[in-house]
Length: 245
Image (cartoon, rainbow, N blue to C red; front, top):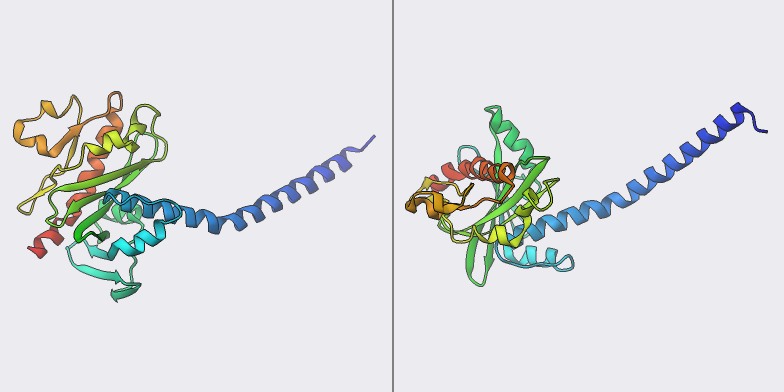
């Protein structure tokens, strides 16, 4: 019969060995995980501009269609431009910019930066704005693509960390996202975000239908979170748009 000391020592050794194996596996897999996250991000950006990509061709399509990655400060000034594989101005990557941290700075009244991506496909230029917000059970995020006039929505993508299946999780479905196409977010340099409306767009005044989409049935909190995310992110580009006009 084994002593308690032997059992304790044996268990300790096994725990150390298993921990070492798991740690090594995590370190080995991390580059692949990071690359998958990067590719998924590219696919979401492209999808918002109606450029469908797969895991296999996402990098190629991204490099072909995303012609500029721009970083703008909260005063609407361009602080960094990345194009054709190199920085034309500054050295801040719009693609790698941590939007969660930048929006936190905004909430504290500090200076912050925001990303803007420009896509060109079949001679058409589209501006893509990354989004980030808080849902019911965790983070929500996405991209909204607008025409060159910064007014009309071309497309959107949304993702979530843990919204309720069949309810709030419906934000990542094509049916919900398709509603945003051709809605307006800027008009004559005036900002008017798209709102996700409980009860449907029909409850809004007729002149506001162009700025609304139907909320998810049973997903009111997540629907409101999408509205808040859009307003909080899109309003940051007003100074930049005003400087362009």
